[in-house]
Each structure stands twice: as C-alpha cells, then as structure tokens.
Image (cartoon, rainbow, N blue to C red):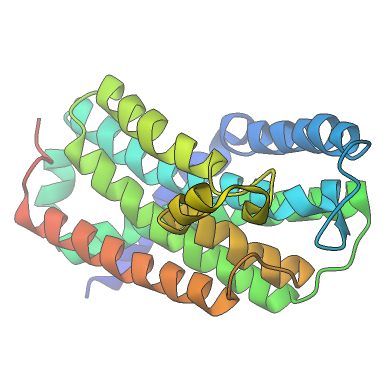
Length: 253
C-alpha cells in the first residue's frame, strides 16, 4: 500500500471541495433551511404531528440524508468524470498507485464531503428547531456509512459516464426521484398498501428510516433493516467501484 500517494490523493480530493465551499457546502445548507422554513413551518399548520413529533422535526432527518447522499455521490462522480474529460486520468494511472488506492482516495474524499454536509444540516436543524438528538454517536456513524456507500456509487457513475449529460441523466432519473420517494416529507404509513410495498423496494427509504431512528427514536420499519441495508450497499458499491477501476474499463476517453 502506497500510503504517501494515498494520503496525497485524499488530500487533493478533500481540498478540492473545501476550496469551492460556496458550491459544495452552502447550497445544501440554504436549500435545507428553505425546506424547513417553507415546507416544515407552513405544513405544520395542517399536519401537526407524525408519530408523536412535529412535522418540521419529522422531515429534518430526511433532509440530512438527502444532503448526505447527494453530496457524497456528486463529489466522486464529478471528480472522476472531470479527470476523464480533461485527459488527466492517464497521468494518474501512470502514478505508483493501484486501482484499490485510487478508488479509496476518491471514495474517502466523497465520504468526507457527504459527512460534512450531513452534520452541518443536522446542526442547522438543532439551531432552527431546538431539539435533542436521541443517539448522536449512532447518527454520525450512520451518516459516515451512508456517505461511504454513495461515494462509492458516485465513483461507479463517474467511470461509466462519458459526458456531463449522461451523468445528469443518471442522477436525475435515479438519485433524485428515489430520494423524494423515500419518505422525506411523509411517513409511508400514510400511503396505500401498494405504495408502501414499493417504498420497501427503494434503498434510499432505508437510509432515511435509519437516520430518523437515530435522531428521533422513531421509524416506519425495523431500524435493523436500515442498518443492514446501508452496510450491504457499502460493501456492494465499494467492491464494484474498486473492481471497475482495476479493470480499466470506461475510465479512458
């Protein structure tokens, strides 16, 4: 393992998104604040409580998870695709770094961005709503786990996409719809039976359900299922991303 090279690449990836925090951090905070102020405080007048908590508080975990997974995915996918389009990837591939080390560096960079954004939205929620997190250690740990999983998925998307249009299509037709259909703004118990069954087939539902349990202590389904789903996605996406990088397919333009 080339620890120096791995650290250097991780530092570059983390420094890249911190250097443009106005694009990578602030938008998530602003949009989350708007969701809380507009959707939360406004709809709370019509939907007073869900499972014993205020509506504004109920939607907060979903907003945290949405920011976590979208930022983690965007960091690795955009970084990998940019390297391909700028013809910089061949230089990286000639460096004394294995496919495993390159993959881990990108994934860690994306996981850091997802974790930072998730924790910042959590802090924003505590400031605006003033509540107590049920399990702060479990919450942070779950955010890190989901960030790693979706950073790995983003690396796969970045390797498979050939241009920005393909990347946008993958995200707009997969990540965004599944996020909004994952129970951010509602409990799945408010849906008819057939829609509930569809929700159980949505992996992002389990991410939102898990973070809602660690923060509020409530869930629509057994929280253990959410933790196992997050772990399974982490293993599958990480393994696939590393194997695809090592194969060299779709990573040269």
